[in-house]
Length: 350
Image (cartoon, rainbow, N blue to C red; front, side, top):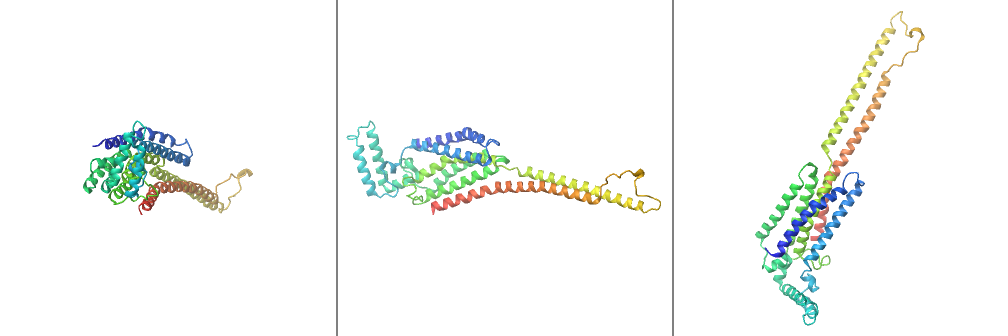
């Protein structure tokens, strides 16, 4: 394996540990309940992850140096004549006889190497698909080899993603992560298997297919850990809310039974009192002229039943509304992200 491949593997491993052991705890701290308002917490977490991923990818790209197109100052759409003119101009500027820089010879050799590759259409295609290492190894597109290498990468990351998103709280994060992994696989296959770069020249005039794939691989750890953090924060325990709803319904049923029992007793007392009052020689007036104690009537009990039912129904309705909103938000977010990703990919590769 070449030096560039070893450096990429080391960079990917370093990035994985960097996001898992440093960035993920920081994001969890931002998303800790009660620290910020809900929407503001999500916005801060996404912004933090985006800034970290952008800065990290920028420094990694700077460390890799400019590609052959950038070195010559041409684009992917440049023809051999334009490349030859750009090389002639740079060779006069960077020639060791005219360039006082201590590394003038290295600069001149780098420009000469870029010119030799881009002027050869076959090597140029290899460079676009597999980078400098592919040119050094005289690599060619082989479907079987490409599928094996791709399978190794995606199976490895799929296993890591599965292990990091185990548990009920990480269900949404696991769905989002594997959706992103599948989308990245589709884009990579489309880039490598296509005859020309589907990315418009006006959007990225010098970036190659190899660099796009490398950038996706570099950003995936950030995406995966972002999904883990946001998934845990937005997790809704539907089972717990369902249990709470059932408890509320049970309490409502108990209230109804108690009030109905009181109504039954009151009706029985009314009937008994009416029967006793109809007997001769009895008086319905209280003894000694004392005022009668307030007695529950069926109408009053029914009114009490209505009040209790109204209060209980309000609590149950609030629980059901919360359950529906949280469940709908949790279940549809992944779907909306998939639709948005599909629209973006379709637009870029149409």
